[in-house]
Length: 366
Image 1 (cartoon, rainbow, N blue to C red):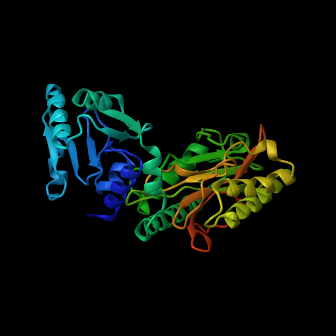
Image 2 (cartoon, rainbow, N blue to C red):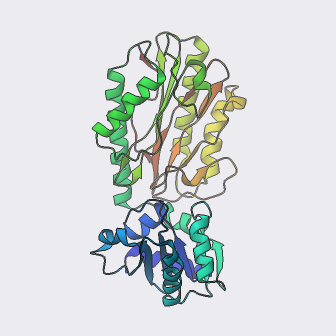
Image 3 (cartoon, rainbow, N blue to C red):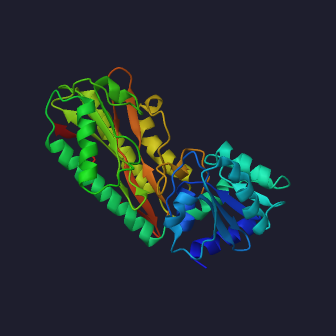
């Protein structure tokens, strides 16, 4: 049995669950190595604590698993009236009609849940997000290598996009150039998110959307972007100066860079996610900008761009070697501008290592 399935089997037993039901998403890919997308036809993977597994699929997906004799499938055709019958067959054959079945609350749709409930009316459907988070939290060497490559693609793409930067270019134009560069340098088309390119007052919004505002002399420019490689994501942010910026704006970038370094230095096995946040936040508070750091310090990263561990002050989750997450402190001054510096790190046996190495100090553009 593959190691991931063996660990899942033990985790289900420990959680007093008989099985796990997943629809398309990172967890299903993690356990099967297969990629399915959410559509109007239901797709469900079933994994039992006894070690059995099966997929419920539309017939059109048959070629995708043609060589997977280890993965039984229950197929249905184009008539939705068939769906219930096939779901009943699958759950009956796996002995799950009165089972305790774990699901992902943030992923499972009502469509699949209703079909599962109708197929197994005596079953209980329970949240299994903690089981899956623990299963996926520690990355193996291949996962870390994929993320390292995603970081390399992202960094090279940014260099390419910025080589064409000209004063007066709009946020939207620069974002479009960055997307093209990401694809040219090898990112999969499914980016972790559309790049955030925010300049001047717009940079005071942590989740700004690129606009048609021209990027101007004196702006701070935040670029938050990432790439995808073999299903794994990178997520980076750097802040640039457009020409000469006022002294306080330059100062907040220096403070954020110091906070980023403190957060990275705080990460090591045995410490908690909360300690990483508090280390970064203390730097910003000491500089007098605590009210302007309005979000957590980071989030887990892998097959999802946001996954556990979440790096916020009160999170007691212990860090373990192999965990990967972002460190991304920021300061946002309403109406004036903002700064954020984000790196992707992996916890090592003795500390943590940054997968990203672009300069973190204020770099001039224009």
